[in-house]
Amino acid sequence: MGIRLDVILIVLISIIISVGLNFSLTSTPQTDNNFTKELEFKDTMLTEVDKTMILGKSFIGYGVSDNKVLVLKNITYFAEKLEYIKANEAKLDGHVLYLKGDIEVKETDGYLYKTQEAIYNQESKILNIYTPFSARMKNNLLEGSRLLYNLKDKKIYGRDIHTVFFTSTK
View 1: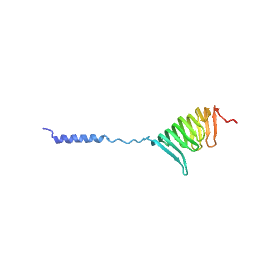
View 2: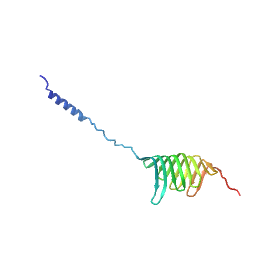
View 3: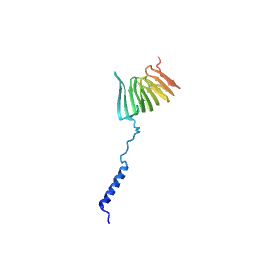
View 4: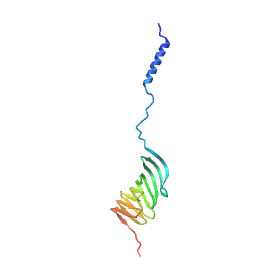
């Protein structure tokens, strides 16, 4: 009266197969993908051009493009009428460059501006400094709490301005 071995094996194999088919071993792909990073780079030079000329150049320590906004670290930007713009951090959204941290803006044959936060519009060539700043050209000194500078027209609008200008006397 013994149970035959082949009957036991058939029953066990049937149980293992039926239990195995009840479990899904494959992982389902994630349908909600929040990955939006488009580009990431390090120690790079970017050149901005249009159909006829070079608009500007940038040396960047680190950058990432996410949702069509370019976030940059340790940037030096060169453009027409500007010798350079340096900042610890910058964000380029369209034609507007948002600058933050140890900013230096050097005009070609002009002042060197220093501040902590500023906005530069590449299309209109307007520099908006909305934190306390200082500017120096040779012995001339300009300080204030806010500054709006139109580089095209060479017009400056400021708030709480303190100046020292040296002129030649004859």
